[in-house]
Length: 475
Image 1 (tube, one colour):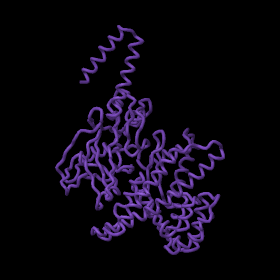
Image 2: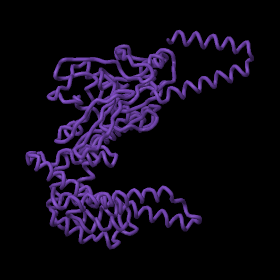
Image 3: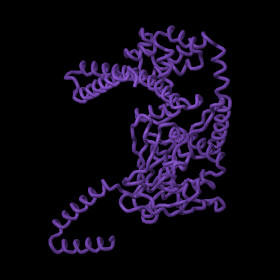
Image 4: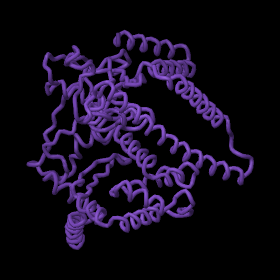
């Protein structure tokens, strides 16, 4: 125990009490009585949010320094120092691991290289997003040049008062280019290595398919789709120009106008939704919840539409059995070190996305909750779907996880600081948690009582007999 440990603990306790008291005071606050007072409250709260973001940045950097020191003391190799730190920050801030990594990078830049931007954040001259823009646009500079740009822009002096986001970005880019034009040019030349395609959900069973491309390639692809659409519109195609471009994009990438051609999409739905027209929503991996009617339509297209028989879809059904009420999938075991294909599909269907709290990235790795080296087995109970970043973070020193009892598959994740977070698999379509089941039962009983009251004693007796028969069949 070093001499600083006692005062540091006391200081932490005092800060915790102060923050808790501040939260309590905010919860008790109410809108002002007049319009001018309400506007003042909004401005003051915005300044408070900015000051809180600045303090979070200072805390994140201090936490990073302390964790690296502890890791070095524990004998962690130099090249592995820092592993899992951003993931802990993400969990504390209820963010995804990717977001946590960006927040830590932002904090380091503000605290160590951009004091004027940090001061502007602390005093409310900037919000966290605008501070992020300034950090992002100076990322290509050396630490010395970045400090010079920070001093030139002087965010804490009200430089950007009344300016929009584009003005902030333009000012930062101009200052960065004046300091080091070569670094800015090199950044642009290397940007092509960051090209990628992403998919994000949109309302009403739509999605955003986005491609980040070099400008020449992007313009060429858009021009080709535009020419194709213009030609079809001129030929009398009833679709809109944007619709034609979207359809052509799908057809040219999948080889089929409908867009589904030999690709497993793993649509999860109940048998009642599929065969009986039930309204229980389905789940589409990579997107989320979709309406029951839409799910049936994609599996059973409108027979009145003309279809090319050579392009008819092959549909395969895989039955998944769930426990009544909780909706947990039944068990599957394997003695293999790696998850076999069947068990892998089972876990992916159960977990849907990465199981780390606040992370909804796609599953990339099948992880043993209790490590194989520590006696963990290759079973669905000891398996969880994780994204690549979360799996690597979990392997850092001080992290642990254990399966826990729950309404559905549950495990507890513990970080090096001793904080624990619980992860429970999402409910499958058609399942209800034990917490909601009693309330549904009470609702049915109330409805039955109303029916009996309206129908009279004879009808009530018939309804009771039917209810008894249904209960016996269910048992």
